[in-house]
Length: 444
Image (cartoon, rainbow, N blue to C red; front, side, top):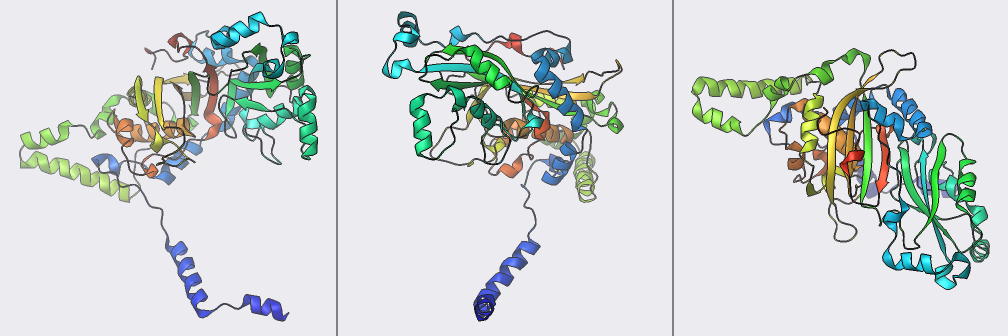
């Protein structure tokens, strides 16, 4: 009793410090990024952007992706009335030295390090059925399910090593890219290696397919070069994002012409217009900006955006090697070690579509965003989608996303869009070919 009373005593100095910290936390407000362009009065705050992106009928998108996993990419491409599905060709990942080794020495005759077999596994899974890819204690993750399924294929030496350490006997896989909870994948790629010589690709496929039927499906398993690495060997990743519209939004989002956005744009001609006009016109421009500020203070911001404008914003990223550190999350914005933050975007488009309807009626209207790049940072796709929508609603310039890359704080970009709309379509190990894109360059 005495000990507990002594433990509860607080010195005057500690009491003052605790009071100061609690008072600071109580009065702390969210710090917003200070945008300097006139569009700042129309730009949503982080909370407003979060609410706009999350208050949507996401379950229909989740159900659509569930059907896509079972029907593969054919259902996804049907959104635009096209048929495109890339089949993985293992010949594109064989290196010359390993190709000679694989052809000259049979699997039974290999010894030492050459005896290790590496299998490339192409699989699809429904994001809503798992707690992400990465294995975590107590969670139902894709990696956890796969590695438990591969336990029977672990070689004897590793089995003994795991038992000596008191660890469960499980396989070990490496993946092309980890996905967050809720993110679906249609052609994710992982690799499994073992020194056992009696393993057949068909055995691996059956073991994984029997773990979580319908929610985790293996498309193909093949033996590849031992130097193959799903992540480091990949040359591009293909992502797709579906943003559903609410019923009450009707056709405003997609049919909104560029004229409204043009009226709110903060283009480079503004200063020239001010110089070339009289005092009355200058006052009109200032009044317009003041009106934007009043609307901002009164919470009267635009709640619609143009898909055409989103597409224009995203197109500016194509064919450029840029640093996307402002569009990443859960990574240090400034670092001296680790992988670089530069990414090369091959394809970036947005277009309107409708989800298929079971009763043959008109399905849910959605905006589809397609991104293909050599690499993506953590949550980069989701931040890009949310920021593009925010900038389109604010009527920002077409190069607004590129300008945001020079920002000094990640608060300059919007919070990540919900993971339910994101899908990893494919991973490529040959040069990128635009023929496998779902949104053609002439489609908006």
